[in-house]
Image (cartoon, rainbow, N blue to C red; front, side, top):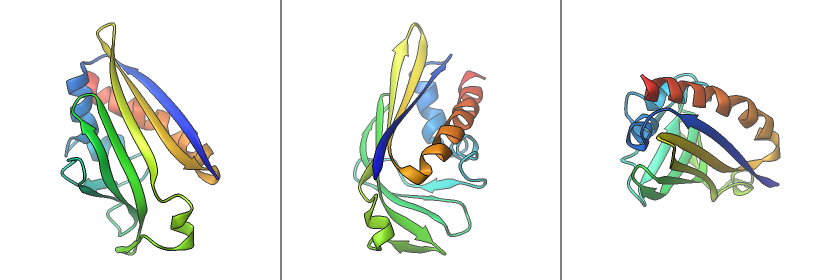
Length: 146
C-alpha cells in the first residue's frame, strides 16, 4: 500500500544554488550517499527523459523525468528496478509501486530556500525514508550553503 510522505528543509542559499546541488553532476552523488554509498544518476534531467538511479554496482531504479521547471519543481516517476544491471519493469513486485512519484519543490522563504520532497512510499520503506531524508538534506544544505 502506497503512502504519501513529505520532508522539508530550509537552506540558506538561493533556489538556483540549491537546484544546482540537487541535479549537479558532482553534487548529486554527495547528497544522495546516505541512501546508497556510491549512488549516481544517468539522465539529462529533461522532461520525458529516462533516468537511471544506481549504486554503481548494477542495482537501482529505472525512472523518467515527469516534469522539470528549473529552480522550482522536479518530478521523478519511478517505473522499475535495476537488478544486476537488468531492468525490471514488469514483475509483480515492481507493479506494486510502478508510477509512484518523487516531487521536489523549491520556494523562496525570506531569502532562503525551502526544499520540499513529496513521495509515494510503500509501507516497508517508510521508516527508512524517515531516517534517511534528514541525512540527505543535511548534506545538500552543507553543499548549497558553502
